[in-house]
Image (cartoon, rainbow, N blue to C red):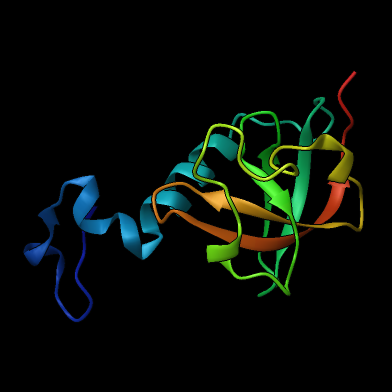
Length: 123
């Protein structure tokens, strides 16, 4: 990934392997924006979500990893690393307009809470 370092000019840009910049969230944000370009709001499984900071994003819930929103539970208490994981991982019964879920940003390996603003149910 071409990286521009804060406080430096374009002449100082470097190419960095994913593992060097993944934890910053920039790789996740870039790839999520690229996927958004191909999505249509009316497509089955597509949702518009809003993060706690007000940023909105269109996502394809069929390819995202998500789980129920449990603000009282720490990440260490959740079992999302096994094949089965928590019972609520990718449980589409949780997906409805106005509901809160947590969505995984895979390169940072962190779940972020978000509210479902719009949802086109799957058929």
